[in-house]
Length: 371
Ligand code: GLY
Image 1 (cartoon, rainbow, N blue to C red):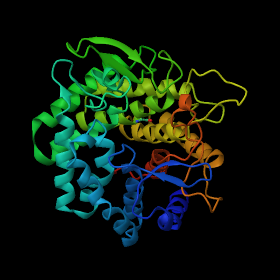
Image 2 (image 1 turned 180 degrees about the vertical axis):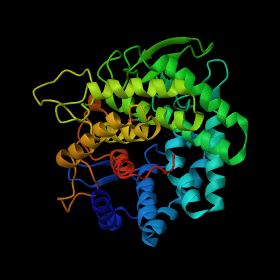
Image 3 (image 1 turned 45 degrees about the vertical axis):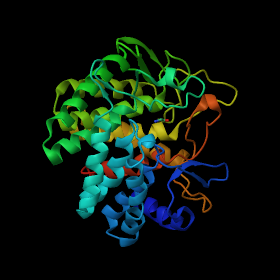
Image 4 (image 1 turned 90 degrees about the vertical axis):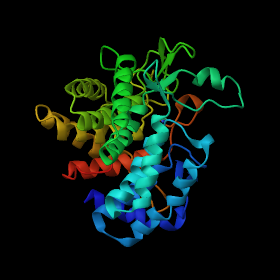
């Protein structure tokens, strides 16, 4: 069974990963590790918690809980606070509290939700992407000020969770307001997406969509699309607002219609194919796969279609990208495209691995996870 193979691979790699948090794979299939506060740090912990949920094995629990100080430290350092607190805390502290009842984990997750809510811009009604920095290297502040990212769809689950835990209405209101603004400006008429949207830094009036990590501003970067599919399914799950389900269907249908012949995501749905052929993104494929599986749980009308597409993607990831047969590999999937325009176009990525595991679980009937 796939989840069993994943669990065994995770167990084999404890020794190599130690107390650190994988960031991106090297060419020889080892991990480079996350620095303090890096947005990727929650995904490996999320895999450990999924493995503990399935097996009850204390080894996975210990590996996960020993990382709690890493996340606590992040909340104590203002320079490390940004819009990615949902990615970081849903899969660490929320998961820990859910599976073990640990009260400190709950307190940390609520503090993270408060810090995320504090980044809401009242006029533009969006959560600011990337912190503004005092050290204005290159055009960093000009780039960041008044900007919203498509990844932020995933970060809303932390706010909805905090609303459920505390009853404080503003968590819910900020999540819904940001999600509505993001849908309005990041989702195009045909169901494709922009990566980011720029507002005037002073007035917060909308300016334009841009696709910084994709092929071009008007193209559709597949990982951005995958964050929208998975994130919007969570937003619909929490809010019950049918408008979010409708837009989740639209972005999902766009992705399904643009997959490769092997049912995987090219790194950008509009990228020209060069002499190397199609550059895949296994991480976008795994996130899309988990997102379609999540959507199937919520949309009885289209469930069969979404589940069928997700099953095809999962099988193809296992056939074309999985590293189970390579004992040297410290991760699960090859062919992740972190940032193609910077040359980071083929590597293991912890978010690819986490969502591959999540997709396998969702498609085998386990729906109650951590988001
Ligand atoms: N959150 C940045 C990325 O998806 O690469």
